[in-house]
Image 1 (cartoon, helix red, strand yellow):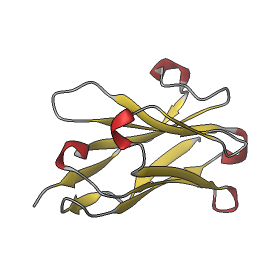
Image 2 (cartoon, one colour):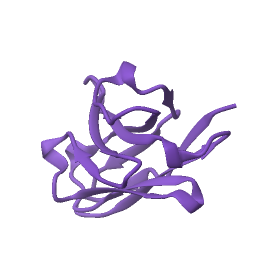
Image 3 (tube, helix red, strand yellow):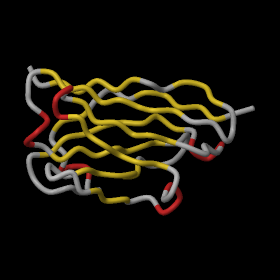
Length: 123
């Protein structure tokens, strides 16, 4: 059974950092592009960032550029999202998703999804 599990979310103060993890089971992430998406309260889900099998990255969200970094550790079958200088507007449920094709912010293109992890930025 192919499964993605996110972890690392929680409550953090503005200006703080979190590192989210997306662990795969039942398949090898080496052959998949992995994207991070987020859904803030009352808003539609949006693409944040994506990492190709080559390791090259795409940032979809202008608001996180320079603050969020996606990376992958194929040996651990895990993709990470390092989030620095967090702001209250980063509060959202963060999801990772996998595709055997090219990175895309178009959700139907991403074939596998995790259940999400909550990130709350508040003082």
